[in-house]
Image (tube, rainbow, N blue to C red):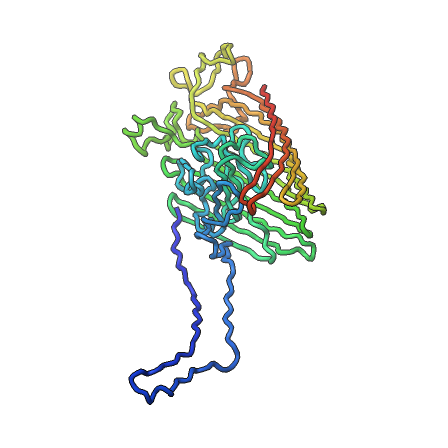
Length: 489
């Protein structure tokens, strides 16, 4: 874990005003007519100019509460962090871990560096993670099948400008249907007006090694287009056991603005390789403590080898939030997006050469060698591919205290997922951790622990009549009606 020493220097400027004072002596009558003349300033007035400039990491230094108390203007229970707070956190820390200090939030994790998205347990006011909506620049970024947030895979901390958490129901216009307990929103930094670059390097406990590079184009010609692209690499050993985590990440955001309208294009790519930790029971924890781990070296016949527990996840997110000022108090918002992820998660186990089944049919003699007492170690390879595309569109009309919004959100999600078995050789090596060479039955059929094709369509219409009263201290909103259709084969 990286530690920083921060030296803060303050420059104060004080201006004193002098005033004339009349002194009168009461002890001597002769001094009654004597007055001291005040000293008047002469010459041109002096001016003191104080300027401020953001730090290279984006911190301004003047955000309330060091970035933990930004001004809130909506009548909702909402907490937020700005860049001033985020810039002073370890760059490996994920967003779910950052918000642990917010009111009503409880976060459990098994990774001190914040690299593991798989084992985060988040609750907000007692509502579970599956009931928390997650947006990144208006894009629904949670996994539609299990609602995991995966905040680490979507953006590097250096490109994160703000984090908002609404403790309660989400906005009716948000493309979410599960957010009954809260709404977590990440806002990416806007590309700089000027060309430049930024680099950050980290090292620390658990052999942490991290590098980050970013380039800003500034305004390209006189087109009004600005963009930045960044790349980072992270590697760290697990805090217990022989595993490690390696992460490669790229972010890109491009902005075009004209008048009161604008369009953005954001692209995020991430690939992470890690290993599942071994979780003890209470009795095992009392007996072994942090030493209850997977085996570092392969023991012939054992399924507890750490390399059998490998997890790889690749993800790409593309979004294009747009807003258009149509005049006459009309505003249109369009947010198309596409997300793809694939990979595998492996778990060690064992199969019997003669006692295995293909469904409810005996698989026959598998003839896998080497075998130990009739069984052989395998890695259960769970391979998946997720494709998630959607469009959130709305039209708003503002008149007086009323803002009428009519919108529609459509999303399509498909996930084929299969779990096969990969046999280990005498040295504990697996020919393919991604399931290319699975164990087959005597008849040549691939053995699966499961094989599904999951599909989901979401159709959500919303009508929101927002009425602002009492100087925007009271807002009344409308309704939202989601329709979710799921099927699995």
